[in-house]
Image 1 (cartoon, rainbow, N blue to C red):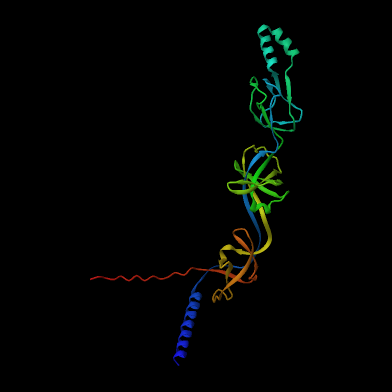
Image 2: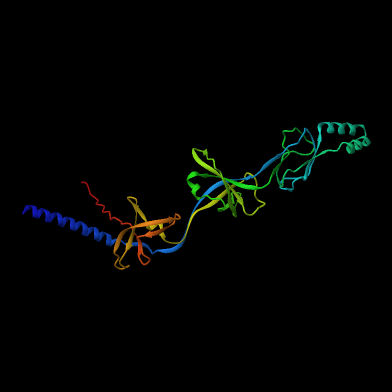
Length: 308
């Protein structure tokens, strides 16, 4: 008989605990509620790159001498075989200087006989740097001008993000110097060789701007927005309605109504998330209401004791 009474007592205690827990849950009020909604979810990540010439070519003289004239300035477009510099060799410069001292007639005679040498552009492009000026003496290792055929954006991509990168993929970007102006670009090259950057394995990619803008300058910093995944018309709810416990995604569903809520914890399966909304693959129907409960507020009783 004692064992029977003991078992009955334990069952009564368990029953009372379950009852009070149920009552406690029922007393909780709903703070927010939502149902499944259809929306496009886009996963994006940002990378920092640098504007850089695709082909950077320094124009150096074929001989040492004096620059007589530079026909182009920074930013000027040039054509292949266009004359961009006139130069005198060291011998011509010395002869012309001597002739000037002798007479004007002697100077003009040697000017016509001993012409300066033209330096032409080796390719179509534009001038990105002018490093010397007329009258200066230069050696064969001195760069007078720097030419670029095009400006692209170089970006280092973490190897974990490489799966989202494909040749021809469109990206959006802006220059840090012009944060309100957005440009479209296209990935044109992905390096085959990795390198270590700050103990992270990265791959270099090249992005071609689809519209040539005059504000692009070599060395500018660019921020690139790359779309990793896009899910159209995904059935989703805000992330704040989802909790995680023991590697399981849980929501609270109200199977009753607003006046008499019946709350049920339910496991769901999720898909794509953009950081604010998450796709629900299994576990919820369109007409079901997911809720957030107001946190319980414990009443604290302060007993003031008087000491005599």
